Amino acid sequence: MSDVGIGTGKVVVNRAMSLDGFIAGPDHAMDWIAEYLSADTFPEVMAATGAMLVGRGTYEVAKRMAEQDTTYDGGPQFVLTHNPPDEPDPTVTFLTCELEEAVATARSAAGDKNLEILGADVAAQCLQRGLVDEILVYVVPVLLGRGVRFSPPSLDRIDLEPFSNTQSGAITMLRFRVRK
Image (cartoon, rainbow, N blue to C red; front, side):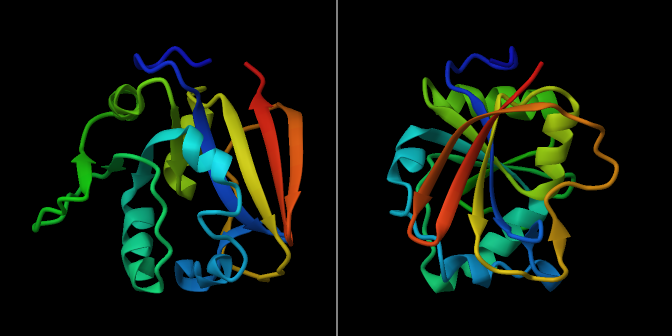
């Protein structure tokens, strides 16, 4: 387990991914995910999640998706950003601190449950700094052809240990431990 923060749960990067390796389509489109995944596809994941840490881009995409009724109750949501919005959003806490402090804050809020990391940039930064315990990937049966890749080309090699794969309908969930 990472030693950042005081929560006892794990830090888990959670991603839905097309078979060709994209976590979002062109213009960060995420509507393709709702066709396959819902909050009740893998209820044990939601039950194990105590808080979420996302970047500003992911927050903005989630706001656009709100009208699609893709609610996901992963506990308190923290948004790490250099530029919080002018109008506060009572549903999230905006953090302008360093990454390690943001992870510690969100882990504390998660209590003994997992902290879920969403979004390409924040997840890559957490992986690069050794703050992630596990990666959970929902492989969705679609080829997007272009969009936001699972990881940026700047991410160095990170070794993983597979420990679970589960099928639910058309979705395959893959789980990996990050080797430290």
